[in-house]
Image (tube, rainbow over all chains, first blue to last red; front, side, top):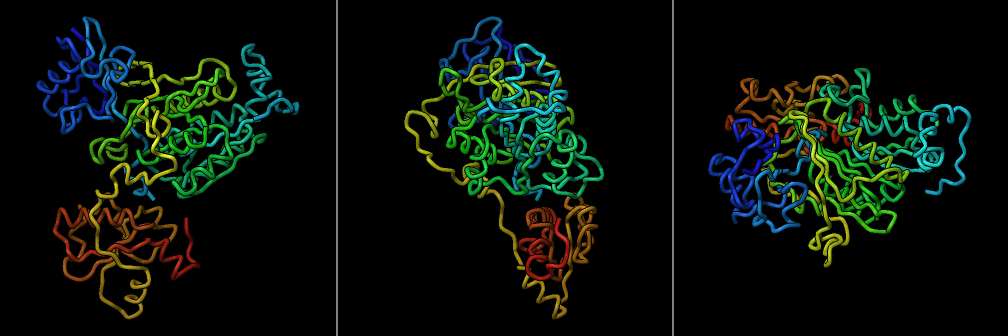
Length: 99
Length: 386
């Protein structure tokens, strides 16, 4: 069973759970399973073409899946899969808003 | 950054003693700090600890870019500032605080917005950039400007309980260039998908933790002490107290410095982040037209959506309804006659108008283009800007 780390911005879609334990063979399986269990995650983890968008990084253990076999990267028992979205931080999203 | 001839006074040697006595650091690293020029972009939540620690550590020249003024809501995390600085330009308040912390360093202030037009000129004077900005367009702008200028970009970012740190575009002692932000995230999320900290909030101490790590990496980049966080990406979850450091690689498809670069100069980053298509235009009135209306006694309601402390500094006699409260005070806004809404420069008032139009169907609202600052520039230059 792989463990998936859900980042804080997406936890509101997983009943505030930070770790999901998933039976899966690949990253693609994992994405499919967690978006089936938590449908609101889907628009954040998959783009219109069903791909993980470029503002979401998925790491299998210490490595970006883009440097492995993308969504087909294998996961094993005890693999930690981290989902890490881009965050810009600070104040408003729109740069001139606070001025 | 030639540090060989750097000299210290006795007072400086006493101040930096705890650095100098560390064997792996020593006088040589302290000289490198004094010779270094660091540009800190953003003097907010992240910029506060970065600036305080770089100044305390003795970085010889520190530049600060920020166009904001200190606001009450900043004080929960922006530890550079106190109550007495509310309403003052952040760069000026920061300079005073840092100069009182360390009178032996030079502080250069840039009270302006960091844009595609000025980015390369600003960066070229410095050796290292620390990105403490708060939005995606500026993140990509800082990244691209650093890559195009060949400067290391010490990156940190925060949201709610989560922090990220990395060092981008760093050339190590073997001459190998590390990845940059576009290798990590090739494109930003669409507007609205990730809430901003203004909507989503941020735990005040988090930028203190993450900004301190950012300052640490700046010092390592300058001195060459330790292993710089290049080609690696650190994340911290304050809620679970879990940290991870991932490996990062350069992506051959990177449009800046991959195998087939397509970006050779700075671009329009709001367009890149799809921000230009988001905002629906609102009806506008120029300051000149407003002045004509005032002179000829046109019947209109005049509303100011800035904050009370801004109103206290300068106002045009409009009715004060801060942006955050416009919906609850919608009943005070006339539905029939013309209503002119203004803020400092016109952005917040446009947002207020969209909110009132969407929620209550107003059709009689006009945004004062360029806001009270535009009015001061063109009509009443004797009034105080802030």
